[in-house]
Length: 148
Image 1 (spheres, rainbow, N blue to C red):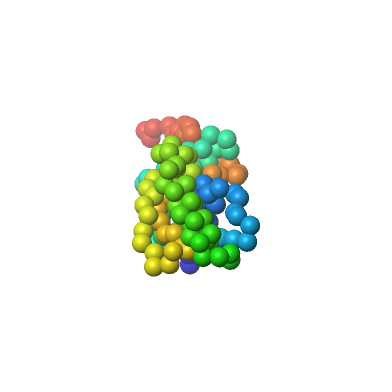
Image 2: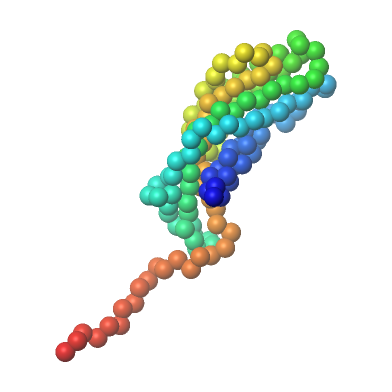
């Protein structure tokens, strides 16, 4: 059975990439994003990375290595190539803090045989934010009388 948190990490990477890209696309062009997860690892100790304060619950995370492909469709070849180049330059020029805020720890351009497709290798860190409290034990009172 697939790990739900790993699936959430892959979905979160897609959303992060979408948020990092400019929202406008030139008229007549469209773009399609494909994520190919290459490896998913646990963060912290067995996936546990700490406690969330409100709601009080454990935090679990995953580290994801993935290849992200963005293909440009429609329009003429010159406009599609120019837009692909513009998107690649946009992503590569993002600051380390912008990438880190999105959970991206490494963004490296990879080769693509098609000029309409830009490909990146990405290391992404995902920490699940709980929506309900789990009743984390913070105090343990032992009222045990000694034998004898």
